[in-house]
Length: 144
Image 1 (cartoon, rainbow, N blue to C red):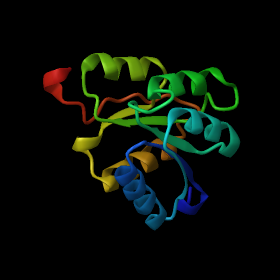
Image 2: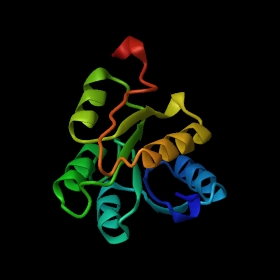
Image 3: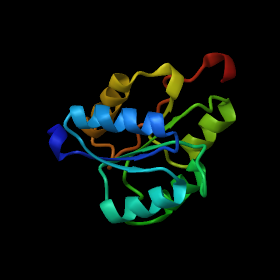
Image 4: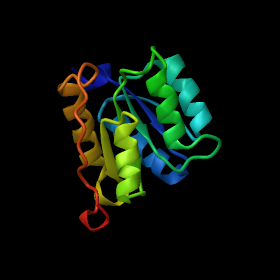
């Protein structure tokens, strides 16, 4: 799959991080849509039908877990791979995200934007819309 054929939905309320990731993804040639709160993100997922979603957990209006529950309970969005990109690194948060259907759980402080791009390519290259590769890379082992 060519990067220009990939649409990413980024749901992140931190303006600096949102802009940084949008810029990085656009430089890589991806099509990017962004939302700065959970309600907008859930609505945009239905409207834009992205190939993959990067989802923060600590969001205004509807947290990332709530967004993930909505996405996975809707026939139109349930098969879209979701990467949780967050600073929450407690084992309970990781386990909850994976249990709700996230394909991966990345701790922001452990990954550079180029690492996130590599994860996106790996997940989409593995055709994760049909499978559910669930890995917990980047989680601080002291908290797991």
